[in-house]
Length: 217
Image (cartoon, rainbow, N blue to C red; front, side, top):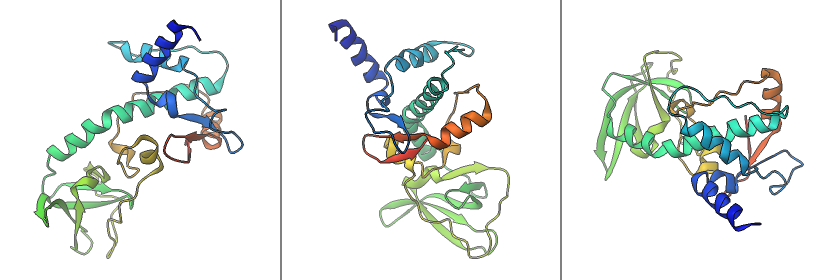
């Protein structure tokens, strides 16, 4: 490998670290065989550096190239924006009486108080409107909560917000969303046949540096 190429690859990996440890594959594909080609970093750079409007990338008739570009682009945006998303959520208190959809139960609870200090930690107090029961959510689980104006789907009596659990995408990217991707920005649109793309997503696994196989869908 030439020195110039090494410099280019180093810069690409520094800018898009997912290219270095992320791989696409299937049940029968090993981690190394599914390594994402570095040239996708060049395409991502082109898309990101466009100041206005959308970028249109025409690729050969190779559905996995466009699919891989969309997946890596979306994951890169999520990883980069996560710290800002978390900071914004923690520094913008939820108003009492407002509604939030809570992951993983996917039900809408009412905010009683945000930022209550108790036992040396900060909590968000949520109320189940069906029975007026109050529940405490740790501040570090803030991204479980998605503000909404729609009171549905409502929790039934006795339903709890559920325990926070790490989602596969959290392990893949080293973030804490609890699988609540409603809070994440998404500026990637993949124009491709819906059925083919759905099947490709279902049959594709992502291999990360510190986690096992994760379904691309």
